[in-house]
Length: 126
Length: 368
Image (cartoon, rainbow over all chains, first blue to last red; front, side, top):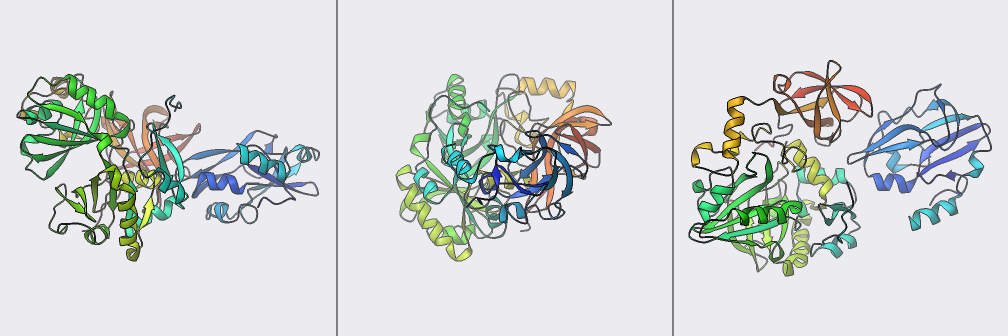
C-alpha cells in the first residue's frame, strides 16, 4: 500500500525525490489515524526547512497533528488544492494530496529515511 | 491526559465495535469507539437521518426510599419536586463551594424512586458524594453495572425505535420516559439526548445490549442509520452548545458562569452549593461562557488561550470544526463585559493570534 519509490519517517511523512526536488506528504496510515481532515497549515514558498523540524499542521475534525519535514531545503511550491479541499489528504495521500515541494539542500538526507518495507514494519508494531 | 493505570473498562458492545472496524480510544477510563468509518458521515447521519451510539459507559445511580426526593433535592440544583413520574430533568451536582461535581439527568420513576444518569468518568465520585450527604431515609445504589445504554438520535430515530418499542413513542414528550420493552427486552425508554436532535436514550440490561444494538441497526437500515462514535457525539453536542464535564463545567466553574442558571432553583429550599451560589450572585460574577466562530484561518481547540486586543482574556473550553454549519466554532470563558455576541477576539492557535467573533448559542437548533 505504501509506494516503494518513497521514503518515510516515523512521524508518518513521506518524501519522493525528483532530481533536486523533494515532494512531501503524509502517509496513508497518518490520514487514517487522523480521520476526516479539514484544515492544513503549510509554510509559504521561500521558507527554509530543516529535517525533522515542524513546518505546519494537519487538523482533522477531532485532532491537530504537527507536520515535520523529512528533508532540509527551501519550499518552492505549496499544493494549491489543499486550502479548499483538504479532504484529498484522506482520499489520495500519495498523489494529489502532496503538501509541499522542497529544493533539497542535502540530497543525501532522503536516503537515510525508512524504506516502504521498514515503514510498514514500524507501523505494524507501533 | 495521563494514561490511567487501571485497565480500561469495556462496555458489553466492545467486541461489536471492533468487528465494525471502530477506532477505539480511552475516554474517562473506558475503551470506547471514537469513530467507525468517518466522523463526518456519522455526524451528518444524525443531523439528517439517524445514528446509534453505545453510551453504556455512562453511570446510573438509583435513589429509593420515603425521603428519596429530599435527598435528590438536597444534592442537586434543579427542583426534582416538579417532576412527575415518567419525567426527567437536567440538573447539577455541586460542591459546597458551588463548583460542579457533575451534570446529570434526574428521572422520577415513581414516588420514592429516582434514577440518575451521570457522566462515565464521574460515576464513582458522584456516588460517593451523594452517599456522603445522605442523612435522609433513602438508599443510594451505584447501579451502573446493571445497565447498558444506547442512544438513538436523529430525525428518523422515532421511526427506527418504534419498530421495536413496546409502546407508542410519538406521544412521548421531550424529557419524558417510560419503562417498556425494546424487541421484547425490558427497557427504560427516554426521549432525551446529547446531539441537538430528536431522539431516545434507552437503558437496558447489559445482557441484551448486543442483540438490541444489532436489531436497532437492522430496524434503521431503511432510513440510513449509522453506528456513531464519541467523535460525532462531541461535534453534535458542541453545535448544540451542550456542556461537557471537564470542559465547560468542572469543580472551579459555577452554574452562573456556565449559563446554567435555568437548572438552579434557588427558592426550592436548601441544597449543597446554594450558599456559595448565593454569595457569588451577591458579589457578581466575573466570567461567563460564550460561543465564538473563527473569522480568520485556523481552528480554536480545547484549552487554547483567548485574547482581546492583545491581552489574555480567557480560554477555549471546546472548539473545532462544525460539520453542519461548515464553520470553526467553539465555546470560551471571557470576562462578563466581553461575553456578549459581536465581540472581536483572537484565539491563540499554536502561538499565532487568529481572529474570531463571539456569537450567541446554540450554534445549531433543529427545525421542528
